[in-house]
Each structure stands twice: as C-alpha cells, then as structure tokens.
Image (cartoon, rainbow, N blue to C red; front, side, top):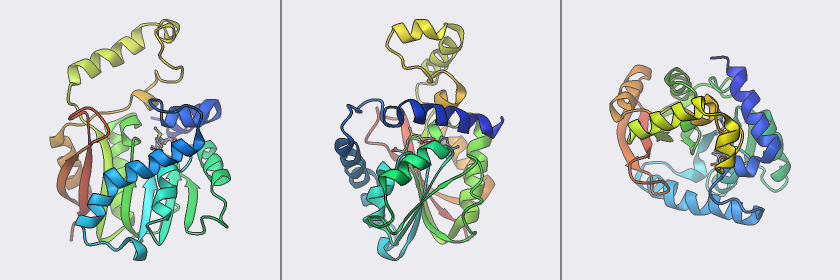
Length: 247
Ligand SMILES: C[S@@+](CC[C@H](N)C(=O)[O-])C[C@H]1O[C@@H](n2cnc3c(N)ncnc32)[C@H](O)[C@@H]1O
C-alpha cells in the first residue's frame, strides 16, 4: 500500500472536520468538551497503567502515535517530562500546533510521519509509547507490523508500549459491514447517516486476533505482557496491548 494514501485520506478528513473524524460519537462543536474528554480518557485508560509499571512520568519521554489535534497529547504534557506526538496527517499536525502554542506547552512537540516509520525519533529514546484509536484505522497487518518494528527501535530498555488495537471479536459482522461498504454506493450509506470519507481502507482498517497480536510482538522482539480490556468501547471489540522491550 502506498503510504501516501493514508496521508491523503487523513488530510481530507482533517480539512473537512478534524474534530468529527477524531471523535465521531461525541463531537458537538464544543472544543473545551473535546479536550476534557481527552483528559477523562487519559485518567480512565492510561493512569492505572502508569501506576502499575515502573515508570516515573515526570522523568520520562512519551511518544503518542496518531495524535490528531492533540486531545491526548495535551493531557500527557501535564504528566510527562517530554511528549512527542506524531501523525501521518500534516494537516492534523498543523491544527495541533495551532491549538498548542509552545509558550503554553513547552514540553510538547508535534511531528508529521509517513505512517509507517518514526524517522523523526532517535533509537532507544522513548520510555512509553501510547496510541488511541489509530491502529484500528491502519489499512493492513503489514502496516501495523512495520509500526511495531519502529516502536521497538525507538523504545528504551524497560520501556512500555500501551497501544489500542481492534480485535477480530465479531469478525463475521465486521467482514460483512466492510464488504457492504465496498459494494453499496456511498450515496446510499450517506442517506442512512454514514459520514463521507469512512469507506476506504484507511478508515475501515484492520482487526487482529489475540494470537496475531502476540505473534507480532514476538516478530519484532517486544515482550508481550497482556491485553487490557478497553473501557471505552463495547466488550471485546478493542483492547490495549501492554508490552515492554524484551532484553
Ligand atoms: C480517530 S483519530 C484519533 C486521534 C487521537 N488519537 C485521539 O484519540 O484524539 C486517528 C488519527 O490517527 C492518524 N493516523 C492514521 N493512520 C496513521 C498512521 N499510520 N500513523 C500515524 N497516524 C495515523 C490520523 O491522521 C488521525 O489523526
């Protein structure tokens, strides 16, 4: 897959309405509420894990993959010494930068990537890698694997990975929905209330079985710890992969 396609599609979404495509379920035009939800979810999802692992956020560098306009990055900047937030869409990154002036967020750095490599990040420099609602949109298992390889490269020894993945739970239903999205004209879907720009593979994305997730970890030399239930989606539909750099 041409990685340019991921950028092209996410730039189109960002130009149309970045906030909507980041938070389709709750976006109501209120930017304060949007960022408050980022903080609420950080407390729900990430804080319990930070309490569990041996990481002191105030002395640590976190990398957020697929930061959008920075709703999690902002909350992370209140916890971590340094935050690097990357996104395949340079349009998302421009909006994130506009919303986070360096004078107010001096420890927060937004960088565009090509969606598979993390060329802007030094090897062995990151303590925690975090990602929410991003890997589910990656168009193929190969792109997910490439991202995991890069995560392993940038992670310090004893670094922690905490990333959100779509599982193959209810895979028959997912498969049928994907197929129908390809077969039925978009105009029909849109009359049923489905938004435009949600029909191609950079939106419908990739789901993985728990076995595949463990195999991917092994393949890139990440030490699988466990899958953590996602409290923000229906039971079993998404999980967080908790892993660490294998010694
Ligand atoms: C649904 S939004 C979520 C944004 C953010 N994580 C949040 O929850 O506020 C998905 C984001 O992932 C980005 N994205 C999609 N594929 C990506 C990839 N391969 N690498 C990096 N970012 C990607 C998109 O540009 C978009 O900003």
